[in-house]
Image (cartoon, rainbow, N blue to C red; front, side):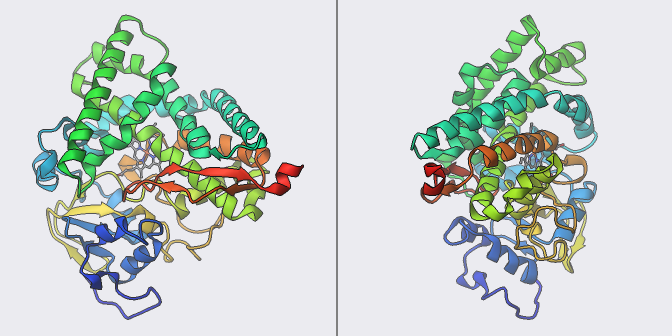
Length: 427
Ligand code: HEM
């Protein structure tokens, strides 16, 4: 830890003797981690947590790590086993180790090349009409219920179904199976929680097994009867040349896309809704061009990013100095994207929500070789949905405090229940 002069970031939260990760899971930081992040950025920008990771919180350092995968590669399998000893030998853990974000070149380059073409601007653009249609339907249904006097949980009614149906359409998962498979994702994610209990790891395994059986059946089905979907396309790569995509890799890619594809975007939509409810005066950003709506979405993802800690677990391949602190070779490094997004050195007035702001490029989707595969898709979903929500549902108010799940890497919601203000209802 480096010593810096006292400033206005408040008393040392670590004086309590509790680890930063424990503090982030407890009140008040579980609801508002940003004061703790500010303290870390100022006083301990490279902080060794008792759970074994060096936590990196300044924008410049986070960007440096993201853009130098040769200095900070994904963790080799034996090291990961030491970090998550409980998870060793569990299927959920195996999948994590071999996932796209956990792999290094040349394997990463090969896999990304295979899957990347299905996420090109053109391919994503071809989904636009379907995405707009879905956005229209979800918002209209929610608006009807609200106008009928119901309080509506927009997390369940809009934020989750939007990306869930989009990723399902892309992959080719039938309607009847979507909701059942969606609930498996939070259980699966428990396996990367540094403080996961044996029960949580077992639940993650069970969820992976269920999803794995399902994906294997889907692959078998598309092999028999190919369709115009991503699973069929990946099956045909695998069948043409299994050196380019092995059976295990195919399965892992499907897991990855399923688990990365909707919780993240749903949280982005929830946060944008909260921003609109808190700051109705900024609604004009959603009344103009698509560029303006995109700027609103981008600021949402900087101000309160869905993904607070980059999912890629990296380690220092050699001793490296970050913000004057030596990170020893072999040290695990975790990137605090939520903290980097509020770094005053990168964003003037970082605690203000200012769509279209000047400053550095947000790192909410990462950077470098592991830059988010679904960034274009998420942006498209958010910009299709947010102007409609603003237009059809003006005057929203929270009906109660939003429900939040307790998770450090993904600050996601369990509910976001709203009502119409009396003024709007009377219209
Ligand atoms: C608002 C929504 C999203 C956010 C904030 C987000 C965030 C991120 C971040 C920060 C990374 C970099 C991880 C790292 O370097 O450690 C990443 C990678 C990734 N994301 Fe997303 N993501 C979102 C939506 C999606 C969607 C919709 C998909 C799939 C359709 C997706 C698939 C992926 C994949 C496969 C990677 C790994 C890429 C690689 O390693 O080459 N994400 N995402």
